[in-house]
Length: 354
Image (cartoon, rainbow, N blue to C red; front, side, top):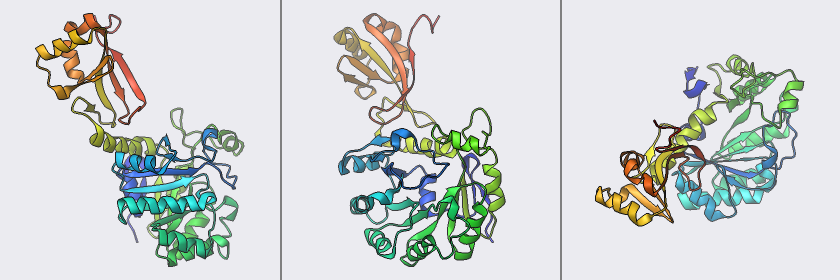
């Protein structure tokens, strides 16, 4: 028997795959290979924007191998999760990316793959030879009662024989107990995700009488309870709640990126964002003279065209002296290049300060 353990943000588990362990550290890059899929799962949360033949590394659209490797380096990724859509509609591309990542970062770079298909033995062997570490199968809901003797059972058995850690990953909805029994019988892991409302699946969920947990969550009422009922000490299982992605996974990944890329002038917040000041100078020479006269270290400011990015605390101390030469603000943003601005606040703005 395995103990049921409580994780962050309401997650719980009896077992974590290596892929999940790396994800919990915020050290897993998400490689979205294609938004196309030949299945029509009613609960699919994928946005219309993503339902195209395109590749993303984390949140960034990428056009070539170099951009993928740079994104992995940016966060010091210890592994990659390959997802979609249905990644195996681009099988050769997936194989290429597995080889690319393994050749660049070594065998220790863990790679897991999601698929709603049931690849044959030859395809499984190709993935094994390329270096795939883990496969997470997502059979359509109408198959959940009938996996025994199906192409999915055969495919999962081939993956397990090849030495690939093998399991299931599906939303926690009615009928999932059938998959739990199948996984327990065959010693596979099962990851249950909390059912989520999105713009693209809301009508389908409502038609099936699903409701939101509350006004501030996109989680579906009852999904967590189904997972609690299904998971017990006899099964290798993990429940991942809706808010985990933002509350833990994204935050930890941002912190990793910030720790690698931040400048001495940046302050890293607990959420992994960075805070710094900006001077939109109308007289760069005079503004710089104030910084020099006050012996501001070179590493605490950076000149970018006619703006100066500067440590927020330094700007607050010198704001009165600088205000005659330009507008000033303090910015909080994601730590990546061209990262999203979370908040900007004017310095010495009469509407803000008295």
